[in-house]
Length: 222
Image (tube, rainbow, N blue to C red; front, top):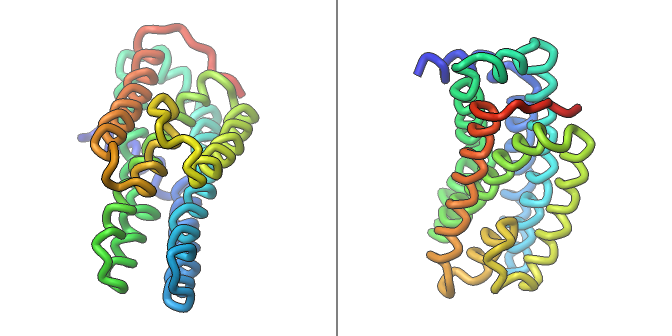
């Protein structure tokens, strides 16, 4: 618990937290009036999926900023060399996951209170799981590809999300970025299977980072 509190103090007044908070506010001031004045299934799909395109880039930037912060403070050497390094990084991942509750479950819970649509809570949960996956994935990419690679992958993810919204990847369980989209588009068929596979991906990416820090000699790429 002390480790989480320590990492929270480093993150809460930093650019990553401002980026997440700012994106949450933008979602509220755009999605809420949009759904009030434009009432159609197409409008709802746009309100759901356009923010998912943005969150891929936002989380990529958050991962880059987090790594820049660690590099400037020389904490990467601590993370790699010290026995507690894996715990410190795990705490950082968990804190970012919790912060991502705000633009996902937080925003869609507000929309639920306004429109009284139970499905909005499900959308918020799936949106948060997607954000957690992207958070774990892009922080892992910080070790493997560096900043430019992180951004390139984020834009590729945007393209895959667009394809997924057109139901191109409905039966492709091996493509994790498509699974949350499929769960929204097909809420009955294969929902639990997709959910189980997607959560497994999230956990796997988390464990991969801990393994790299704890057992591997890695070089952080810029």
